[in-house]
Length: 154
Ligand SMILES: Cc1cc2nc3c(=O)[nH]c(=O)nc-3n(C[C@H](O)[C@H](O)[C@H](O)COP(=O)(O)O)c2cc1C
Image 1 (tube, helix red, strand yellow):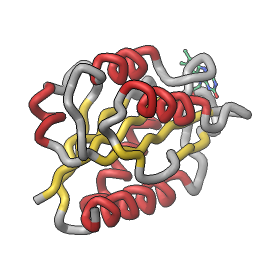
Image 2 (cartoon, protein in one colour):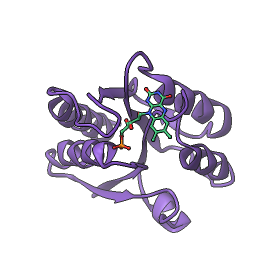
Image 3 (cartoon, rainbow, N blue to C red):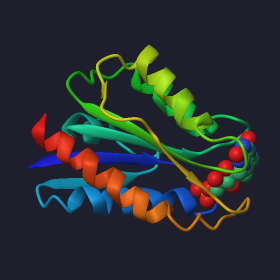
Image 4 (cartoon, rainbow, N blue to C red):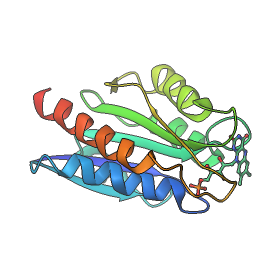
């Protein structure tokens, strides 16, 4: 059975909700297991054992959270060849894709073994602490389901 690790940060719980819904979409295929983890809690062996890694965080100060940038930077030391990846974020106002775009750039630069299989998911939060916009969880489930299908056919 294939497996995906979903590594995410979330200060107020909105990105965590997105992460859980993406994981549910992936698991809907019935043939992939998912593991959710915070960057500081995941072990290198868990990353090595997975077939794919998803990265998610809120936009903070116009980019990914500090913890996520640090995590992606450190992953450069691990051999990740052949694994698939994609990113997701929550944002406010006009900062759509600020975290996803920078995470994708960092992945291309530092984690060249990973294959980015689809553009990142950006979900709007209605206020600083949320909640998520109405369509966000539906989009997250579809995002996960599509990612899972791509992993199964890769
Ligand atoms: C320290 C901090 C900085 C933030 N900076 C931005 C920002 O630059 N642009 C933006 O769109 N939202 C910004 N936000 C709002 C977050 O994107 C929002 O709180 C987040 O999407 C909620 O997700 P969470 O519940 O997973 O933490 C910031 C929030 C915090 C706490």
